Amino acid sequence: MTKKSILVARAIFPEVLEMLSQHFQVESNQSDEVWSADVLKQKMQGKVGALTTGSERIDAALLQANPQLKIVANMAVGYNNFDIAAMTSAGVLATNAPDVLTETTADFGFALLMATARRITESEHYLRKGLWTKWSYDMFTGAEVHGSMLGIIGMGRIGQGIAKRAAHGFGMRVIYHNRSRLSADLESACKATYVAKEELLRTADHVMLVVPYSAESHHTIGAKELSCMKPTATLVNIARGGIVDDAALALALKNKQIAAAGLDVFEGEPALNPALLTVPNVVLTPHIASATIQTRMAMAKLAADNLIEFLTKGKALTPLNQVTGN
Ligand code: GLV
Image (tube, rainbow, N blue to C red; front, side):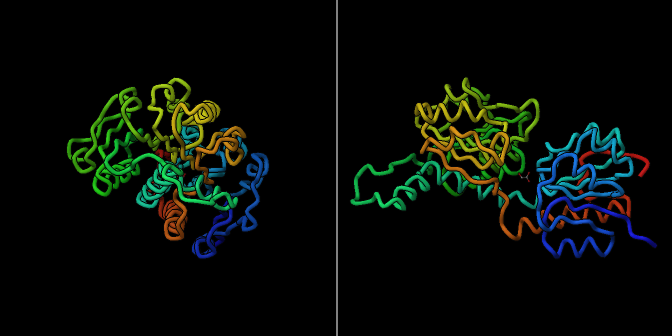
């Protein structure tokens, strides 16, 4: 029997390609070229399944040009690169990669918070430039993390992981804002108190963003929100570019309206708002919150398992939509 054809749109662990090759005819992209929308549309020709990362957009134009497509498996928990409504009406199953990255991403959120509040990269740059000539009592004094108030916007699995680290490990008071309030049991496991967004911005010493990107969450933090925050506060975005208005943030950092920010994601990434590169009080990382070997492997395997399970047995592990007729 001829094997079904699938596309792996970006470079991936060779073990995972091997795993897929046992079931499918695989076209891969091990040179990791970033394809334009037109090239991606072209490469999808004849494929019934595809493994994508958060960088490949699956939209109506691609779906129209590829009526044979049955499933796209995202190697990411976020899926704002998918037009889910268009996929559902085209009968294409969408899957993401939840759970396997929760703890690793929560670790990174905490690392970025620590690096930002305690000015780790800023002070390292100073040292590397050969500017360190003496110890001074106020050199790179930052903000306390332990015992301070953490405000989390977006309290899904990763937000809850951060809350637990903060409350149990660092004795922080945790407040959160979310579309829906957690159950009393989850609130008590996270030691987190639900508050309105305005109260969170006004009272938190550190604000962490872990909310999925959507039209509704676009610019959750803009000039108005930044103006409500404490001048000593830090802001950490490990969610998605576009949750923060990066131009407004760069200005707020320049004017010391807030103390510092830690950003793993950016509007229009991998391009950055150039103003962010001109302010010292920001820690910048290239979208690496889930980047440990084990976690990236687990994400890739989950995406591959979704393709295998769906295309060989008709049932995916982590579906995002319901489709019929496959
Ligand atoms: C990473 O950003 C993801 O959504 O998995």
